[in-house]
Image 1 (tube, rainbow, N blue to C red):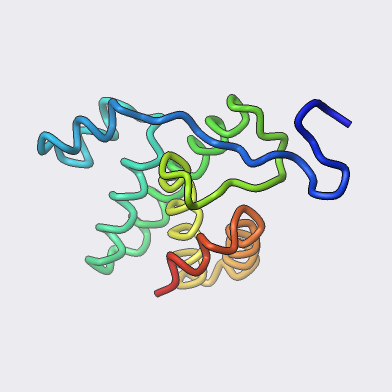
Image 2 (image 1 turned 90 degrees about the vertical axis):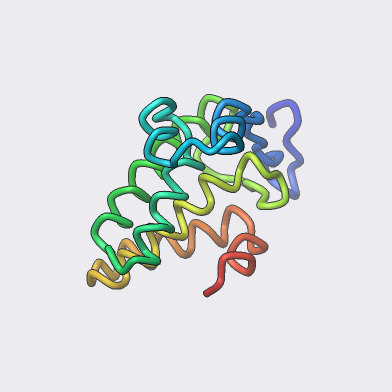
Length: 138
């Protein structure tokens, strides 16, 4: 057992650090494209781009933006102690960019017929936090 891990409940939740760079830039009117270019490690910027593309029915672009944000989010999670499993709470706002990308990847994969990927991502989202699945339900 590692420090902070409960034998019955598994690993502790992973809480990503606050990303003031992204939120500050978006708050002063920077476009998501500019924020993603300036801070490519920001899952939130990629999630916004994926959601915008989805809303405009640009499914392939949504898929691509979501995939970048998803992988950048995995990097951030690992850097912050995540071992490939365990809770990533929706209620912790800095986690929401990653979780939004995971949801966007699931929905766009489903539309393009990548069924196994869609199923895997949807299950991963629920495994991270069932509240995220509910919050992001269309």
